[in-house]
Length: 423
Figure: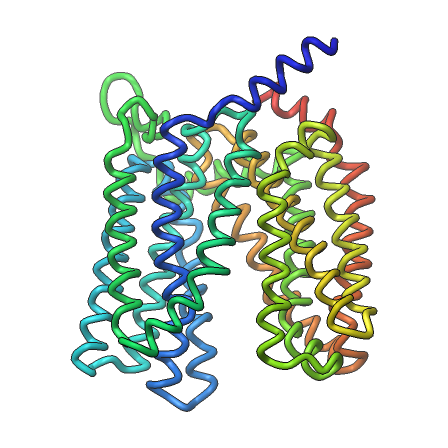
C-alpha cells in the first residue's frame, strides 16, 4: 500500500509538460498586459470625466457580456476549434486595445469610447474563458489539474495583481498611451503562442470530429438544454455549484465594503490599505504553490472543507480585529484558503465534465457563481448600513464555517472518487 501511494505521488509530481508550459507562457504574457491596464484604465477614466457613476460603471460594462453572452459562449466553445477561438479572441482584443491607445495618442478618447472598449473586452473574455476552461484538461493530465491550476493562479496573482498595476500607473503618468500599447501587444503575443500549439493537443470537441464529416448541429437551445441536464443531474457538480455560489456571494459581499471597514473602522490610510490588500494576493500565491500537496494528503473533498474552515477563522478574525495587523493577518488566511478551495473546485469541474460538454457546463457553472456576487454585495450593503461595517466580514466567517461542515458531509472524497470513475 505505501508503495502504491508513492507511485501515485510520483506520477503527480511528474513534469507538467511542454503544452502546459506554452499555455502558461501565454497566460503570463496576457496577465502582464491586463495588470498594466488594470490601473491605467481607471486613471484614463478619471482624466476623461469627473462623474463617479461613469467611472464605476466601467466594471458593469466589462461584466455585462457574461450575463448577455455567457451561455452562448459555452455553446460556441463546444462547437469549434477551441485553440483557434482563443487565438482569434486574443487577436481581436489586441486590436481593440491598440485602437484605444491610438485614440489616446490623438486625444480622441472619450468616456463613451472607454465604455465601449470595456464592453468589447468583456465580450472577448467571455468567449476566451469558456474556450480555455474547456481546452485546459486536454493540456495536462487529470492528476495534474490542481498543480497546473495552482501555477496559473500564482502567475495571475503575481503579474496581474501585484506587479502589473503599479507599473501601469507609473507608465500612464509618464506616457499615457504606453500601457495600452503594451496591453494590446500582450494579447497579440498570447494569440501567437496559442495558435502555434502542437497539433498533438486536441482542441476540437469530440462531436465536431464525428465520423463521416461534420457532425450535425443542434439548435442552440437544444445544446443548452443538454448541458443543463448534465449539470443539474450530476450530484457532485450540482453540490459544488451550490457551495461555490454561496461562498462567492459571501466573499464578494465582504470585499464590497472592505475599504469602508478598513478606513473608517480601523483608521487605515489609503496608502496602507493597498498594502493590506496585497495580503490577499500573497495568501493566494502561497495557496497556488502548495494546494496540490495539500490535496494529495487530504483529498479534494477534505481540502475544500478544510479551506472553508480556515476562511471562517480568518474572516472572523479580520472582522473582529481592533487594528490593521489582525485585519491583515485574517485577510492572508482568507486569501490562502479561498484560493485553495477555488483551485480544487475548478479542477474538479474540469475533470468531471466530458470534453464535448465542457464549454456549456463551465459557462453555466460560472454564470451561477457570478450571479451570486451582486446579491452578496447588496446584502452586505444592508448589513453594513443597519448593523456594522464589520458585519459582512463576520458573515463571511460564519457562513464559511457552515460551508465547511456542509462540504465535509455532502462532497466527500468517496463521492468525488465515484464521480471520477463514472466520468
